[in-house]
Length: 287
Image (tube, rainbow, N blue to C red; front, side, top):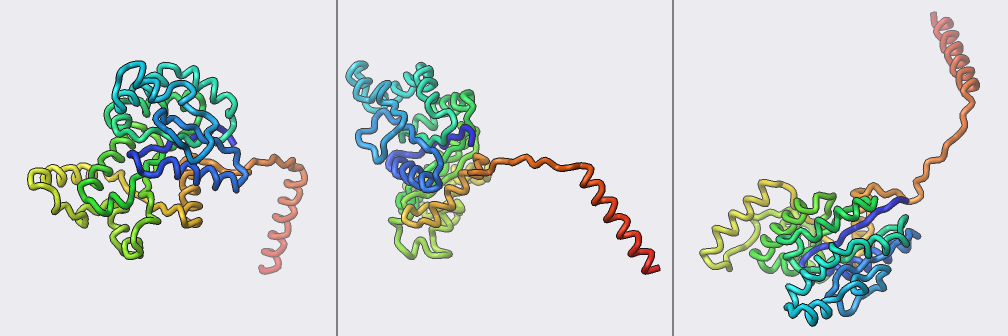
């Protein structure tokens, strides 16, 4: 099938680990050899059993205790330590050289917006020969309940798309937790998925932030890059559709091997000549 990797990013609490587990189970049903790589050194309990785990190299607890850092600084240190020791990841990847990888990244915003750790990691995967796509998750419950946070999420999605420089799918996660009227056809969820900023209610923002928020909306609109796909993990059709979109981004086709067929060229030419003679006789009869 070739080397393919999905890098799952998004703010903390957006459901990245659950999404990784769902993808893993779905591709398992399709009999695709799939592995999850945990690159979150702060993870305590995982919903899945990772095939590659950065905590074997360094954990947040190690960084905090040995360097005297806080949680945010410790996480940044861990990711920079990983990038400085890419030989470890190279060695780990050798066991899965022809498999499909799902990579669960940390949720710290700075790693996407301020520090080029995640872009450097994506580039490292490409150097290993992987076709890479990214999935950005944003909590739909937060997005639909707070206009200011939704705009912030859109800006972060745009920043991520530009910094990673790879095919990317934006998802509004946890749609299964939304009220039915929000998810209904023509409901407010459609406006959020389309980044319809005219629909977004920012009236609760302090006056001094409203002008800035509207300016940020204009910037996102001008790029015309950010759109979201609603993701409801309880709906099997939705999950299947998301997986199909990701396969399209990665140009993956299961069991699509091309089989060569020996063709007798002399036989082809003979049949072609016979067809031409038959057509000529038919035209003569019509005359």
